[in-house]
Length: 119
Image (tube, rainbow, N blue to C red; front, side, top):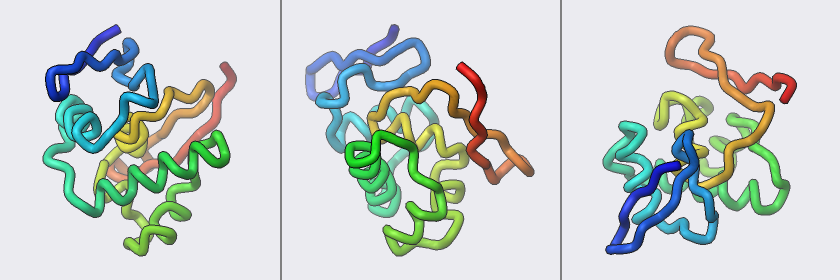
């Protein structure tokens, strides 16, 4: 388990760098996690994507289809891949929990597809 410090407060992360307590999340926490995954500084388009992902997860308890995210934040079709390289980085920055059985595979080194696997 790791941690980051934001505004003098220690924020706990799991062994994979995911936020343990979703209530600790705010834009400053997102910016610090982004630094940890080499996506910094965050711009407004990236914040818009991760906020949409957070809201979607809170409503459906699931990872959204990537093109659905881009469509609903009025960004180009591959916005998650373009802005974050690997969508799991966006998920971490959004402060959401690691999802069992979900990972992303690269199809060409820069575009990713979600793939389910057991466990």
